[in-house]
Image 1 (cartoon, rainbow, N blue to C red):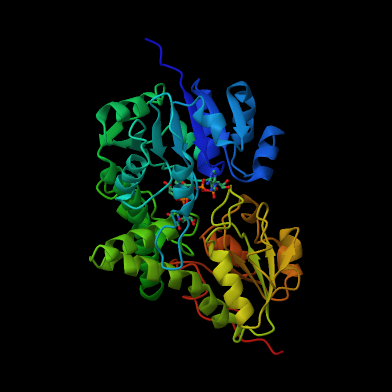
Image 2: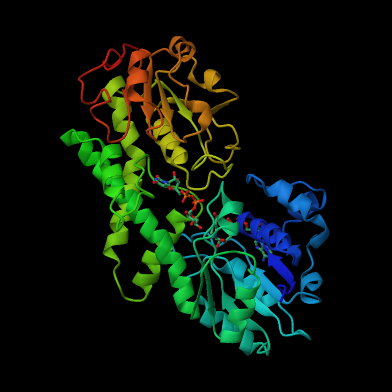
Length: 446
Ligand code: NAD
Ligand code: UDX
């Protein structure tokens, strides 16, 4: 029997909403995308995609006959069998997830002729589904089903993650609703975990928290490597070959950022705290990550002394490559710390639009422009354009040839051979930190 094609409403045209829309359309479903931002909907209708995600423009274009965009909820509620909620759930000042956009959607849903299912794709605290169910019932919408179907895509490879997921998680209050949601994914080869709604919600939060914990763990190992002479890359390789550990998310660096890990780890910690449980481990994961972003300052000071009046080039502004997303990027913390120290900050990124994030920094159009006259260049995002950073052109453009590699992107031997002083993360045998002061290590005369 061929899979049934359904009509799916997607609410929220951001990373998750648009990728889900494009991929469901590719699977043969009819998809109607709703957003509250008129400019977003206008752009999409004109064939322009408001975010940068590799392959997304092409996928939306290829499936345009099955896709439509609207600002009107009635365009969804008249036809759709499913309402996927894909709106943002950013942190509040208290660190909890801000569910105001989710509630705004729930409050707009009218009574329907058909039995449709509300599907939560946004990341929400465990317990949200039960509250949504109660709110729907209180408004006489018992005929709407409810399911939790959290999303695990990572930006930059979101389409591949949707098409080849490790698993699909579907939590439901009624098993039949869960099966209808699972059936939408027919054609995708992945195990489907059917479970209750709070468990589905918790699988999402626990997965992100666990991955963030691995990153903070390997970052602390890297910091210990710096004082013991071990090399974190060799350590991570040796650890990762143990199948119980595995090789993923053991790349030491400048700390994790993005729209998910920072907010979801904090939200889980707050969720536990609000329920009377102190999640001690996550407090440390968060603190280690904050300190890791700031360790670059110490490495710069080791070479340059006071940073007041020194020019520092920040190379890469997004929280990782292949996205234009700067949410919670390490570059924001680093940039503002440098500015607070009185440094002159020059910044480059191939995709980010940093205006609102890095006030006071000079945004440059090229790597060469950013490093010209700089006392140090810091690699914050491992963009491929930076692999050749240790060149003669860059060395002669800089006032002082110091590279601080926050992502262990470069080959230490090549960088040193090219005449740069070099700092990286947890590879002391290769960095100037272990081999004594470099020629750039003395504080410069003003
Ligand atoms: P986003 O900020 O990119 O997009 C959210 C969209 O929702 C925006 O276009 C906004 O205008 C729209 N919106 C807000 N209120 C609305 C309303 N009432 N009705 C209709 N549209 C509305 O968010 P995102 O990154 O796609 O994340 C969405 C959810 O998915 C979040 O809960 C996030 O934690 C989760 N998530 C994100 C990722 C990721 O990598 N970005 C991965 C997995 C899960
Ligand atoms: C993450 C999750 O991977 C995804 O499953 C979830 O749905 C959303 O959050 P994303 O934030 O897009 O995805 O990017 P990811 O590739 O996971 O990287 C997150 C951050 O961790 C980045 O800042 C990255 O540089 C950092 N990171 C990742 C490390 O520092 N070391 C690693 O080994 C891996």
